[in-house]
Length: 395
Image 1 (tube, rainbow, N blue to C red):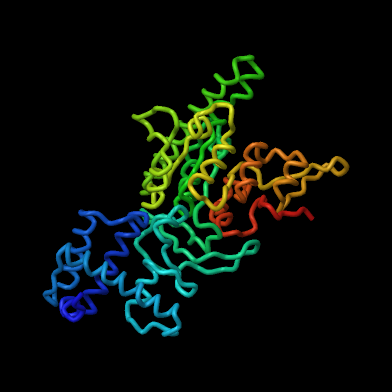
Image 2 (cartoon, helix red, strand yellow):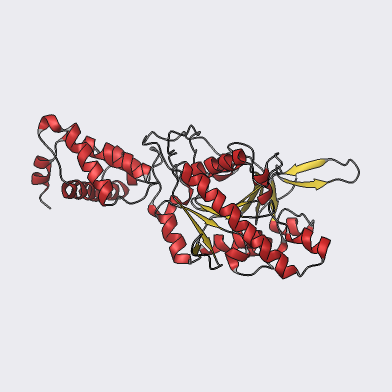
């Protein structure tokens, strides 16, 4: 690579324009890869801003320059990690750190494999507010991005890079008489846009198989299949809400519903996540193909398959409670182990899901989905709801 020729073609102001335009487009695409039309927009912006210098750039020049900057950044990182340098004096190091870096000093976009927890953006690249977690060790910082000028609080330091958010169907109902409250649906969509990239929906707000089995004595498998279709309804509604605010979303099921959703294919789901899209799994039957398993089990299964670091279970209660017979008081538990959860007979999750998470060492956070900001707080490891893992102790 002839770096001298490259320097002659690109002035400092042109590089600054390129990085600003690239970052803005990169964020608008949910941290996804830029394609043909996107690069054309970047080249146009660079040419317009640098018009006075007569340094208009083509799409190919912009692509090559960004690639060269990334290569130079990686070389700088290697020099820093090897101990040859304590501080990089390369003028574009900080800017590239925000785009592809991994630094404890500067807030950064997560890597392609980590986009399952990052929100979409408004084009800004300001550093996320860094604050210490109350309950868990902090992970690498990540920025918060919002589309369509949504006024959402910045995401702090995420504890987990990729999570599966299990959404209770009851949460969609809200306090209204309808099966789905549009305001609640949009609230949840905005929370997801700020925090999360993998979701599993339940359909209890439309149909509860257990209730119908008890009331009508119909076949359990048939009742649960109806409930599975209800989860697809919730998934499509959530998809529409997310896309309305500019979040690219895909719904996947194990049912053949080609006009509505994609078939579940593990590699395809991972690829969607790598491109910065939200992937919604329509519940257990449509998630696993078996109507006799719960959506909790589906969430645990998908978390294991997709390499998720945790399962966040959003419900309509604040945490796991134990009812004391003497005082009739409800004491919230902040931290409990899988074994303790099973031994005490708590109903926060079904036994199969708890066992599966324990065997695969996938922590679970049970929290109130309807409280604004709780998804982001759970993701960052703040004190919200109940953490269930291998080491939890009550007391």
